[in-house]
Every structure is written in structure tokens, then in C-alpha cells.
View 1 (cartoon, helix red, strand yellow):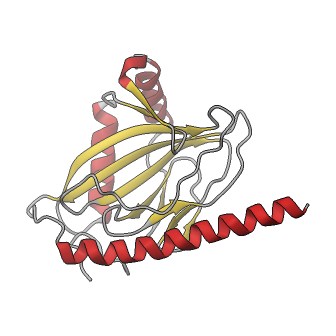
View 2 (view 1 turned 60 degrees about the vertical axis):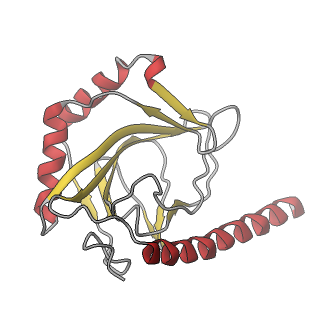
Length: 208
């Protein structure tokens, strides 16, 4: 099934290296560190802290230019945000299977791992991808079910991400009901598998 020409669920997802310069990364953190607390939001379910601030224009433009070199059709950046994952209130971040339901139109997703001190693989349609710092993964957040593998975080462990969502510049077709039903079917399958694995892990830990 083709998701309005953005990405097919069978399209290979790829990791790209060296997205930004050291100065670009520093400029991003300068902007993040100046963000007032009332412009941040913690999603307790994921132990994710999101920052609602404008990233440096030259950094955003560099990301747009980079993505346009790897995608054959003209794209438009619709959303970009910075977030950090870390242990909160003694609980580890947990990202269970999901797809991006916020958007009405299909999205081409470009997830950049900016900085981290741990490895935490991303899973897209049951295939794992491990990013290093300043690397990005391509997938369709609206067309492919994705999640993170389970792992325990130490108190100082963290991963900082920039999430970029693009749509086709000349196509604003909305996600169809047929497409929604198809990805929801896969979502339920992966969600069941994710929690069955969690149950087995808990049982195994209790035996130790």
C-alpha cells in the first residue's frame, strides 16, 4: 500500500550520518538552554521532555536541504521539535508501538539523534535501527508502526532527539480510512507482541 506517495511500508528505512556540524549542534543547545520552563512539556508516559522553542534558522535550513537531497520529490517541513528522554521519578522511558496520529496528511519522518550517552534502538515495522550521535533515521511516522526496544536507564542516561516531519509540497491528500485501518491492524499486532515480551521479561526477572 502506498501512503499518498510519501513512503510505502516496504520502503527501506535508512540511517544517514553527519547531519549537522559541531557548531550547528552547539547552536541548537544554546537555543534549548535558553528555553523558559513554561515552554517545555513533559510527557510522563514516555519520560520525554519536549521543548517548544524555535531552533536556529540556519540549522533548520540545513536539515531541509539535507532531506531534499535524499528524497526524490519536493518536500515541505511541517513540524520540527527537540526532545530529551531520561529517567523520571525513578521510571525508565518506555516507547511502545505506535504511529503518528496527530497529522491528517502523510508524513516523511527524519529523526536525528543529536547527543546521547546510551544506545537505544528504534524499531520500525519490527526491524531495529541503532543511531549514533549526529545520525538520522528515515521512516514514515504516519505509515509505519514504530517504537523503542526495552532498556533500563541509569539516573544520568539520556538521549536528545530532533524530530522532523515532512509532507509532499504539491500533495495535501489526507490519510484515507483504508490506510488508517491497515496501519491500525499492524499496530495491534505489534502492540500485542510488545506486551507479551514485557510479560515474559517480568516473569523471567521474578525467577532470578
